[in-house]
Image (tube, rainbow, N blue to C red; front, side, top):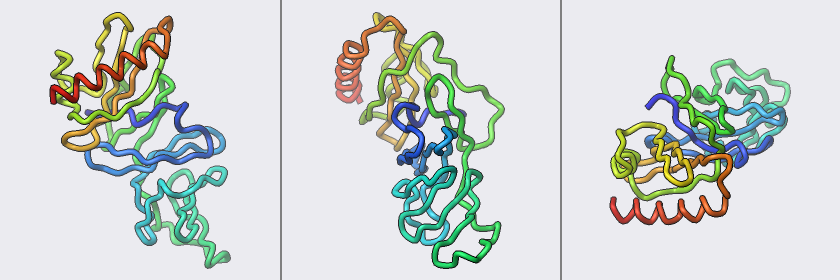
Length: 199
């Protein structure tokens, strides 16, 4: 997989940070006050605290432990205990390539020239955790392992698969624009139960 969906933009509004996991890699996914999305390794370079527990201050992410602030390229810009210190440029959070498209946040853990999967004429409905691997889900739906599985069917579904661990996955669901969100959500709950029973 090149690009992996890690969240819907509606679930990560400006000024928030959330945890995410892709193939055992823990991420802090955050959106600046101006609406720019970022995905970083979920560890503060200072003491290893999870950055996903931190808070967004304008265009920076601050660690909740000692308040170290990192700007949009991951570089430490401010240390509250030493306000006059210009932090060394080597103090950086691990940054991953992050883009948003189709109202969804996409991350690449390695550099890639691939394009973000196209969800077509569909809109995001919701995300749900599934206790099954991404490979098992794709296989159960009759497709090869991919970051996007087009299901079609009565709701014109496409599923962006976010492998978390060897036996768990987050599924970000997209449906046709004319579909009722509540009806699709109920269908997805049943689909999750079926996928977990088959895993």
